[in-house]
Image 1 (tube, helix red, strand yellow):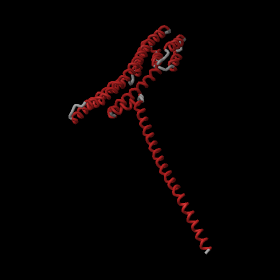
Image 2 (tube, rainbow, N blue to C red):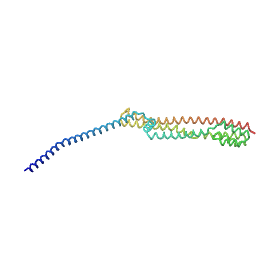
Image 3 (tube, one colour):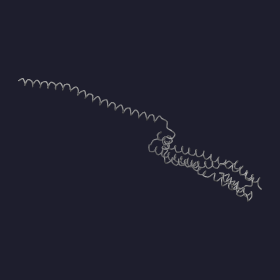
Image 4 (cartoon, helix red, strand yellow):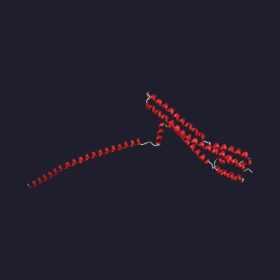
Length: 278
């Protein structure tokens, strides 16, 4: 009997302890569940805030890009695309080839420039001594058309002064032709670059009228957009022609200066030969 009572007492204690454990475990599970819901809600809120911040940053960046002024290169590229590559490319090619020819002429004319006073002094010193071969050597060592003309004259000194003068005149014409080389091509690009621009404008206006016809109404937006795109080619063509025209006039003035120097120095050269003729 005592054993039965003891067993029942132990069983009651165990059941009571388990019941308390269950009562104590229920709040714990609820708290964990509450914490999990809170954490998920916080995570969702954080992600929403992050997305909102990212969108705000993107909008701010786009607004800053729109507000920032475009560089000259960006504006030029934009207008080039708006004008149409089919019409803008020939104008660009004219400009590039024309500038290449201008650079070549500038280098050639700068190399053709000679210190004429120094050259005439050296030639006169040799001629006074009767050393015509030495005078020709001075001309060979000096670059430029003036020295080449003097060399041709000295090479015919034994044939008389009349032949010397004829040689100088003839070879002077040859040197003038070399100085003016490629100028005709530059003049061609000056003429055709604006023509390409005008042609693109006419074609663009025809397309604009076609758009008006399709729309069935003279909308200011359609007219303004078509006219703007049509006139861009003319603007670029005129700018190209203006740049090449300025360079062309510079080359012409440079050549005229060299030609005047050649004529004046040739007269002085003949005077030296006449004065020291033996």
